Image (cartoon, rainbow, N blue to C red):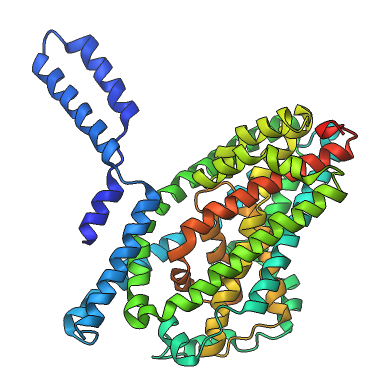
Length: 480
C-alpha cells in the first residue's frame, strides 16, 4: 500500500524535455534510426497517457485519509490493536511520519531567511514609492493582526481541543510518558512575554539557526538584513537581489518537492491517531472546522465589509460582486500568486483602481498579506495546545497567546508565496511555544478544504487593501 503511494507521488514526467528530445531525434536521426524514433514516440505517448491518468494532489490526500480510516477500522474490528503485526505496522507508519516531519523541520530556517530577505529586497528602495509602501505594509499588518485576534477569540470561546483527559491522551498519544514534555512547558507563565523580546535579539545568530524553537530572532535579524541591503549602492544591491532571488527560488522548489510527499505524510501521521481514537477525533475536529469557518466568515463578511464601508468609503456590495471571479479562482487553485493576474484585472476594470496602485499593492499583498492563513495558524496552535493542556498541564496564558499572535503575524510574511505555506508556519509556531510538531497530524485531515477557503480570504484582503490605498491616494474608485 505504501509502495502504491510512492508510485502515485513519483509520476512526474518532464514533458517539455521529452518534447525537445523528440524534436532533436526527429531532425537528426529520423533517416538513420527509424526504430529509435518510433520507440521515442511511443514513450512520449505513454507519458502523455500517464499525465492524463495522474491523480490530482487533493485527491491523493483524500485517498490517504480514506486508507488510514480503513486501516484503523480493520484493526479495531479484528481486535488486533496489541498484535505483533499491528505494532510493527504502526512503527512503520511512525517512521515515515517522523521522516516527513524531519523534512519539514529541515527547511524552516532557510525558507524563513530567504523569503523575508528577498521579500524586502523586492519592495525596493524607491523614494517616490515610500509613502505608498508605508501605507500598504501598515494596512496589511493591521488586517492580519485583526484576523489573528478574531481567530483567537473564537478558539478561546469554542475551545475545540478541550475534551476529557482520556480522549485527549488517546488523540495526542501521551499516555506513556509526559515527563519530558512537562520539562518543556515548565515555567511557561507570563514571563514568556518578557522573554519574547529578549529572543528577538539573539546573542549568536549562527547558533539560533540550528534551533527551531529560537526562530523569532532569525525573523527579526532577517528583517534587518533585508532593510539594510536595500540601502546599499545600486550596483551592490543588484548583486544581492539576484543572489537572494536565486536562494528563494531554490527553496521554493525544495519545499515543493517535500510537499509532494504530503499524502504519504498524512497516511503515516493520522493512521496511528485513528487506530488509537477511532471516531473520538471526529467531535473535536468538527468543532475545530466550525471555529475556523466562523473566524474566516467573520473576517470576510464583517471586518472587510466595515473596512470597505468606512475606510475605502464605497458600497461594499460592489466590491464583493467585482471580486467573484478572483475569489472562485483562488478557491479552486488554493494559490494567491496564481490568482494575482485575475485579481488585478478585477480591481482595475471593475473597481476603476489605477494600475499604479494595483500593480504595487497587489503583488506585495500576495507576498506578505495572509489574513486567512494568519487566522488559521492561530486557531490551529491553540487547538493543539488545548489538547496538551488537558494531558500535560500546558499553560495557555496571555503571554503564550501573544507569542502565538506575533509569530503568526511574522510567519504570514515569512513563508507567504511558498507551497503549503501554513504547514511550514504552523510547524514554526509550534516549535516556538514548545509543542511537538507531530501534533500537526491532527489537522491534516481537513487542511486541504480549509486551505482553499482561507486562500479566498487572503485574495479578498489583498483587493480590499488596494481599494483602501487607492481611496487614500484620492482616486475615484467605483465611480464614486
